[in-house]
Image (cartoon, rainbow, N blue to C red; front, side, top):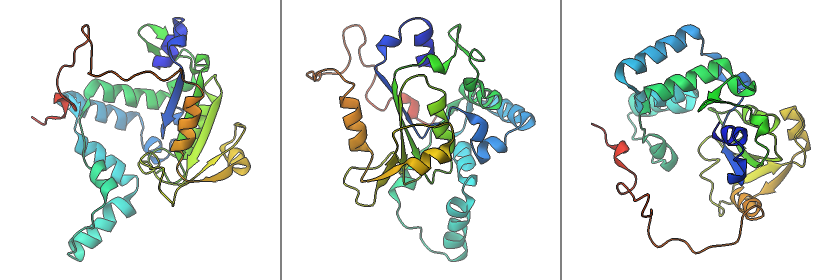
Length: 257
């Protein structure tokens, strides 16, 4: 939406490229999370977060867990409760459990946007008073999806190639929602698929795609380098005289009070 706003006010030249990682813009085929959401459930969810002023991170984690209950709920119920076993260490899920809150107004906007599927309709949504038209975002884009992603189905991620106005490179990683992104270049099990064209149908793209060994990160690095300016010396300190750092990373927003 920020990119569409920049295009509308004639400042898209400030954006060199755009990257979408396991991201759904078109909610028409967004999977169970979209299918389970209706006007009544939406009003209840918005009212609940509105009373608190935020959506608790643990509640959001439960929603994601129920999108894949066999792996993320019943597996632990059987292993931990029924069999009394200690759950094995799993770095990705440990990171996934480190939740944060979402502001109530942002929660409301997400739900409203999902229900209306407004990003697929030019002018249906606005940002800072300007209409949103993703087709006017004609910079090159790199879109990544995970073939076993239970939160953002890869076909829904692929739909972004039909919404954006620039040339899009779509990459399908053989992993899930988090593992698709946390995918180190030295992972011998990794593969990803690419294709030269982006037909309207996702399955047609899959039929034309070729499989590459390794992580998609080196591919993205090369793609990005071809669209970047010359190397510059990194700054010795963060911030500037006009924009000094407020506090050390990761910031005070992570504190639970």
